Length: 317
Ligand SMILES: NC(=O)c1ccc[n+]([C@@H]2O[C@H](COP(=O)([O-])OP(=O)(O)OC[C@H]3O[C@@H](n4cnc5c(N)ncnc54)[C@H](OP(=O)(O)O)[C@@H]3O)[C@@H](O)[C@H]2O)c1
Image 1: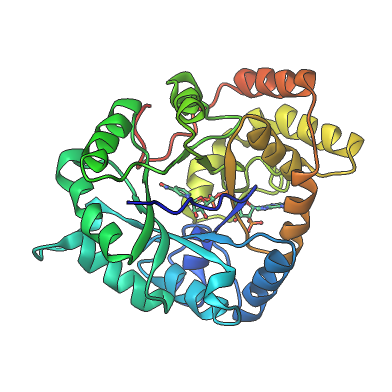
Image 2: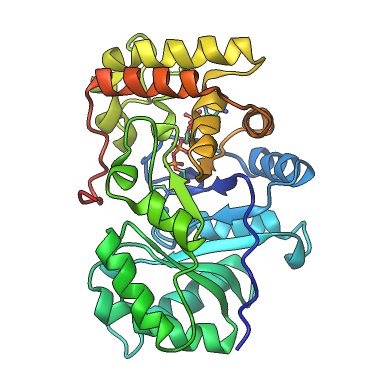
C-alpha cells in the first residue's frame, strides 16, 4: 500500500477563534469576526501560499467548521488542505462515534475528504485509534495524526496503526516559548528522528505573546482567554518587549518573532488568524532567521516569567 505524503507548509492556519464568529459566539476569544473579514484573511493567506487550515468540531461546537467551509468555497478543493479532529470527550453513542463525527465535519466543511484527521485528546488510545483505519482505507481521511498525546501514547497509537500498514503522520501539541513540555518530554526529538512533522499550537499563547495585550490593555474581559492570561500579563512584559526589540532589528514584529522561534525549533506553527494583516506577519516570520543567541535570550526570559500556560484540557507531557 502506498501512502501519499502529507504536504507540510511552513505555517498552518488556526481557526479556533472563528468558532466565536457571529452573534452566537461562545466567548472563548471574544472575537467578532465578520464573514467579509474572514474572506479577506483567506484570500491573503492563499495568495501568500498558506493553505493548510486547522479546525475541530468542538471549536464553537461546529461553528468554526461551518464558517471555514463557507469561506473556502471560493477556492478549488485541491488548492487547500483541511485538518480537523475527532474529540473523544464529545463522542456520540452510536456504533462508530469517530465515523459519525467525521461525517458531520465533512458536511459542515462542504467536502468529501479530510487531508489530516486527528484524535484530539488521548481519552483511551487503544479504544479510539483503531477507528481511524477504515477511514483511511475509504479515502475519506488522507492522513492521520494525534494531538495532546504523551510520547508513550504516540508510540502506542503508532503501533496500532502500523498493524494495518498506516502510521501516525503528524503530532499536534501546545508548544510556545512559555510552554515547552513537548521538547522536555522528548517528543520533538522523536518527531525529528522519525520524520514526523510536529505541529505547534498556541505559539502566541492566544494573543498574550503578541505584545498587543498588556496590563493596561488586557485580553477581552469575560472570555476564557482573559481568565487564562490576564493575571500573568505583568510577568510577560519583559519577554514581549524582547520579542518586539528582536523583531525591530529584523524588520518584523513581536508575534512574527514568536512564530519564527517555533520554526527555528523544527516545528510547524499553527497560528490563529483573525485579521488580514496577521497574514503579513506570517510572511515575515517565514523569512526571519533567529540567531542562536536570540533563541537563548528569549527562552531565558520565558523561563524567568515563571508562568504555567497549560490549557485546562491538557495534561503534563
Ligand atoms: N489540538 C488542540 O488541542 C488545540 C488547542 C488549541 C489550539 N489549537 C489549534 O491551534 C490554533 C492556534 O491556537 P490559538 O488560535 O488558540 O492561539 P494562538 O495562535 O496562540 O493565538 C491566536 C491569537 O493571537 C492573535 N494574533 C494572531 N496573529 C497575530 C499577529 N500577527 N499580531 C497580533 N496578534 C495576533 C489573535 O488575537 P486577537 O484576535 O485578539 O488579535 C489570535 O486570536 C487554533 O486556532 C487551533 O486551530 C489546537
